Length: 385
Image (cartoon, rainbow, N blue to C red; front, side, top):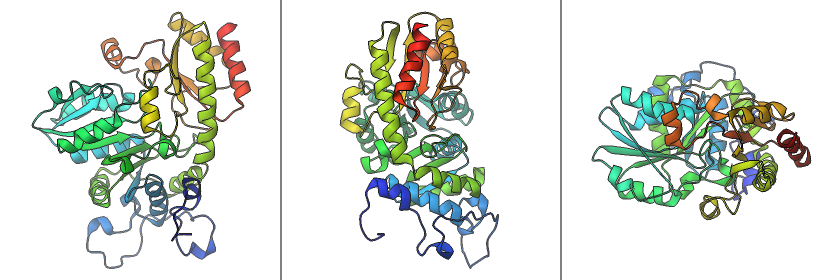
């Protein structure tokens, strides 16, 4: 099997598994050991140690993730934010400049606006859906361009091909957060991006029971980033590696159901008189639809929308829903619902929300694998009651 090309649905099960299997175990055991015997390694980063994210537990799940995205190498981290901040701080130094899409996950956006400048790093925001002003924002010290495959929480699909070409022509490192899409829908490294990031807490794991991140790229880049990670200390626990590997095995079947459900819910909301707008690239009327068709293998399982009315209207709707859990995060088998302005983007000022295009009434819905009939009935009750 290892010598033949495997389809994606087979890789999620078998990629990264050691050969021969350890003592014949079907699953990779949990190596609950902080340190391992010295075997003559010449380099500090090659020592096998739990903080260095290179124990057998780490290697197995990292190799699986790399193969799923068609990359040479990956490394797992303690969280998605650990993956993001470590990567940015590896490629950026004091005096450098980064271009980033104007609508990003709240934690990332806050680090861009308040964290990077404290290190002496300049940040400029662009609309990555429109190439018009990218050249204007480019500087002699620009080193990185950063986007998300599908943005959080507006589910925008940016000009992915143009981003890659722009980065290559200007000698920039292209970094993309692929969390919303997962490798089921998009493989950034095969597409031409330098670095792909994940909050593995979300779709890769899919069960809302751990925190982890992943950094994916060439062997050269990942080895260099891993050295930075080793100093910053964003290590992943071996037991979490085991759980993440187990969660990934159902990624294909979970995403198939979740994407199906998401499209049905988006179509229902789009046709409802009580809904002001729906953000889901699977809708033909959505401005991101054509880009999603060009670049992606699906439309994802995240959507957001605005009901006609006030913030209280949105709160009342959420409180009436019976199936989804009212909480932040996303990507689990259970549906989750939240208002970003109250949670993930609560540290944004009104001006920052406006700049990012986020209405305070906006509701974000992470679609689970529940019965679509039950989910839509739940929506009907919450909107029409």
